[in-house]
Image (spheres, rainbow, N blue to C red):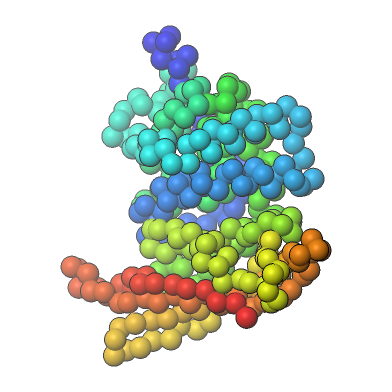
Length: 303
Ligand SMILES: [Zn+2]
């Protein structure tokens, strides 16, 4: 038993500080898992941005830990064995702390790249998502901190909270409902003009990473000038367009783009664009006889 305690550490406390909207996103089966997989991909760049910003305000000791966390996140970005989602109720005792008997949210060991177990009973509440994207990111930073050798939960809570506050400052969200299903666009800007916004979309239990298609749509005007970074603002949804004959629904999101371009003399220019993200859905009849929209495809253009 002594050996077990030395190997694993159980964590719970991040929920008390992490920011976010506190909102429950309906029909969340799978969305919590998607958020964790999305977060692990984004953590290396988030840490880069934090390092370059005075807003992150990390102490020298925290910088040392966060660099180790970044290395572990990079080395495990494609590690399919890193994240494990398990019901604490179905596995009695697995998430319990022997000292106080309380059920914990996550469990990992002090070895870089070791499995991180996440308690499914606590990331969903009656089938609805009970944890925000920022909280997923914070929890993973905390758990990777243990893998980087830090034993103190409090120390890691403080570190993860600094990053959560840094991210929340420039996180924008815009939500509409399509046939009663929430459709939400996320844009994580960074103050650094050389950074590209992280954009994603959630719909019916999935998170779609839109960064690549948005990056490809945003170009500087003149040839031989390359885009080096951009941020989005003024996110707004247009009314859905229904095509009753084909059961198709199209909905567009618009945003302003502040784009930074680098010319051949290494001068940086600012250009403004209007981004349009177009999403096509098809209504599909499910076995219960109810029609539900399914996301067919999406593309971005900017003018
Ligand atoms: Zn911990």
